Amino acid sequence: MHPSILAVVAGLGIGEVYKIGGAQAIAAMAYGTKSIRKVDKIVGPGNMYVAEAKRQVFGVVDIDMVAGPSEVVVLADASANPAYIAADLLAQAEHDPAASSICVTVNADLAEQVKIEVEKQAGQLKRQSIIAESLKNWSGILLVKDMDTAVSLVNLLAPEHLGLLVKEPWETVKAVKHAGAIFLGHHTPETVGDYWAGPNHVLPTNQTARFASPLGTHDFLKFSSLIEYPKGALAESADAIMKLAELEGLDAHANAVRQRLS
Image (cartoon, rainbow, N blue to C red; front, top):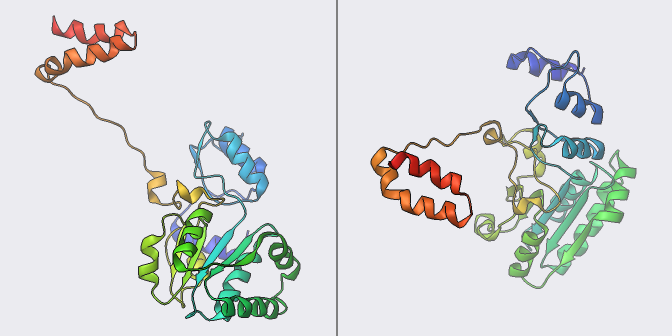
């Protein structure tokens, strides 16, 4: 195991660690083995086989989400630096041949400059074959007529990562409805979210930001409903409760209330 990971584990006081991975690790945690206890919840990213394994064991255990390939959308106006945009697109493209990096802009000159910068910077990076595949199949620069259209497109894409490289990011973000993590301003690359900023970086992908949120402390909490009716309160609501039960044809439900009234 990488010594940096071991150092973090020691610093956090974690005393139980297993060096396992892949779909078989998901099965081991979901069902238990002779050496690994069955867990209640499995969270965290993985490749397509891990994602499919998590999907299949959901119900036996809880999971955070079924995450697909990584993706970024950069929304940019004329105030943006094309070199920054290109760098953000490439940072996502190096993850996976199926990663998606999209720039949405209202400025035709900027779109052309971004294309040039992407080609220039890509030639200087190490994971060139992965980047090339991602850019060819899943990435692009989309030129739209105005910012309203641009934001509407962002909400349709519901990206995992959204970079707002615009003059007024805090105004623009008010219209954003769907995104996993949003990076505001010209000096907030997605990399700070990966490594430093603080919020969890396990994020919804494949447009699931329409209904899902980033992994957070709330995912490790659950609650129970606590219900108590005094006798008078039950008597006051009894007729309505029994009527609803009878409408469903569940007379035993109605009887459970009626018995307490007699």
